[in-house]
Length: 199
Image 1 (cartoon, rainbow, N blue to C red):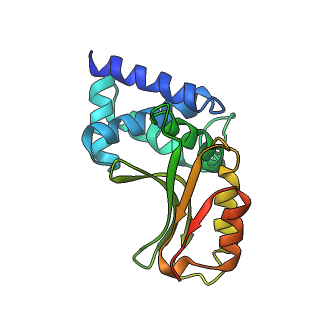
Image 2 (spheres, one colour):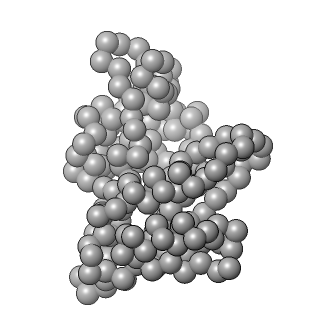
Image 3 (cartoon, rainbow, N blue to C red):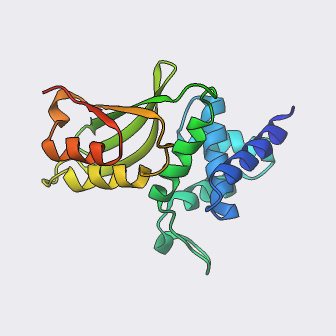
């Protein structure tokens, strides 16, 4: 199978599992994710050169196309500009990951993580533990130096995942020691899942 054909097959998978995306949004996500998986790099220049060569397009055209995908609507060109609210992808993404489970396996581990990227960002993430790795399925990015509670952000992340795991599954939620809080324990219980938080 040629890489162009593989890219198209990947686009069909993305569009099928995230049907709420518009065709341009699904194609943009397919372009980015296909290139990142192939190159094992997410740099704009690397992705641009790879895709421009693969699709026979000019590098500047491809670079702008890739940028437009993640720009806010007000920063995009054209009359039909739209934002992509990534939170609408969280539940479909989790359901997609669960399709990898064998039919008889109805257990799942989710892990919460807060990662600081220097003095710039804090990324709050809920990931699926799968084959010795963690696959992010819900996240939010916050300014690292701006004070404020994380509680509403964690609550929103869990609410985005509500109903995306069958009710007869056993789900444990793990977190680092510093993330424990009584409200978080209750949030996880309200979803029918099992918190495993060290004190």
